[in-house]
Structure formats: structure tokens, C-alpha cells
Image 1 (cartoon, rainbow, N blue to C red):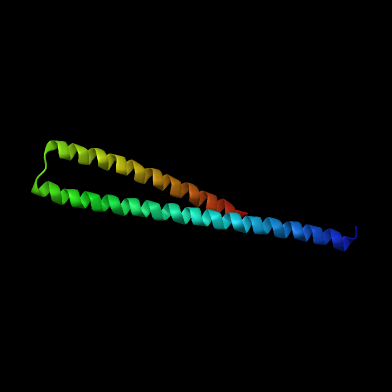
Image 2 (cartoon, rainbow, N blue to C red):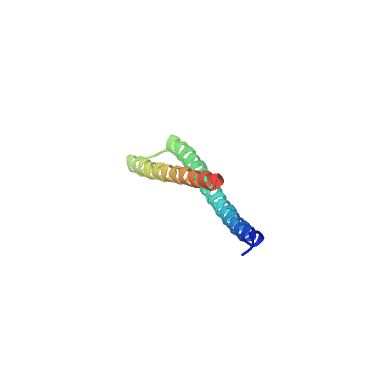
Length: 100
């Protein structure tokens, strides 16, 4: 094998690795953006939910309704926290892909 052929093989291998890294980075970018948008949607929805129910409580609201509201608000807060963790994980993955 000549020196040129060896260099061409190395170049081809490097280009393939680069293309795979670019593809992985794009997939990570899309996953990060999707998880970020989901987190924002959950946060916005939680704020709207709280605002709507606070208005309702000003008009009327029994203790059972208040407890249901509080329980749901806690679960919604947990969902927001979980989604924030997913955003952080996809952000780390994106950073690793960029480093490659």
C-alpha cells in the first residue's frame, strides 16, 4: 500500500468519525431543545393552573377542593422538577457531543 493510499484511508476514517459526531451532536441538540420546550410548557401550564385556581378560591372553595388542588400542585411541581433534570441531562449530552 502506498503512502497516498494510507493517507486516503486515514482521511476517509476521519471524515466518517466527523460525520458520526455531527449527527450525534444534532440528535443531542434536538433532544435538548425538545426537553427544554417541554419544561417551559409545564412551567407555563403550572402558572396558569395556579392563577386560575387562586381566582376560583377567591369566589368559593371547600377544604376538599383545596386539598385536591394542593395535591395536584405538588405532583405538577414534581413533574416540572423531573423535566428540569431531563433538560440538564440533555444539556450535558449536548456539551459532550460538542466536545467531540
